[in-house]
Length: 335
Image (cartoon, rainbow, N blue to C red; front, top):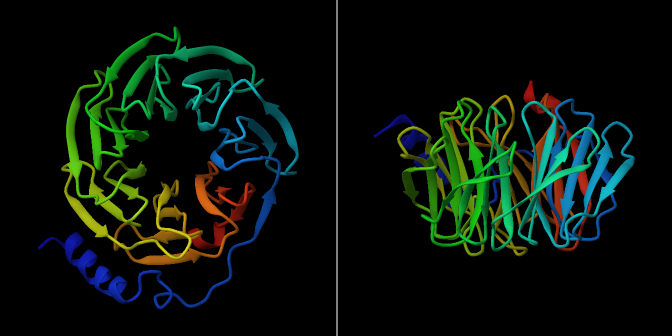
């Protein structure tokens, strides 16, 4: 039995009696935080600019908002989309931003002026997530039309369309080396694709419910993914072999729900963080799979999550009954 699996089994036995982690952790105060208000619908994505000075958010209110991080001032509101804006992403050189919407369009923006540059059309249902390649020449996108697509950033040309996953594709992420792309789907699979050709490498199975989000660790050695509706399940995967390292079937869940809408690694790789409809945010040790910190009893479901470039600030967008954005100083937890 592998060391990874042994650790996971031991921890999961604890979770059988303690699915919400309350006995694992002493009651600890949440880190310092502050709120941003302005959206009229669930905040579906949040992202920092590369200098960490600006935060961009998108919402079911069809709007994208640009905020000054230091002051919390709303600097600009973008209204080019006509429906829910599910995703925003910045290029690695910091010059471009992409947004994707239920209106099926992807818009490329000048990240300095937030003026639109071009629109990419091809998806036939909601665009759920987009991400730039490591060299910023290609944009990967996924959508509710059950497709994974690759676009030429310079021309807007659609280069690749894949339909291997048979239901909504909800999340896409490049590996740090730029050679592989991860996708997660409602067909219960995690897909791995060649980032250059778009050809599939493997499809991973283990989730018991529709997948909502996935992430790749900063060193490229691990992935984790979260499912929703009836199971608050997290699975940690070996990113090279596809082996399940740890399956936490009841990582989230309470009377509010179980769905895990957001997962992300902190930039230093110290934590794998999950956010759920149960209104909690959980910080997991990706080496031992132990639950290290919990921020519970938030005002709404955790729709979106991002970290500042230096990793010291975590920002979350709420949904359901609350449409605010909250920023936490988590620097003490990184020491």
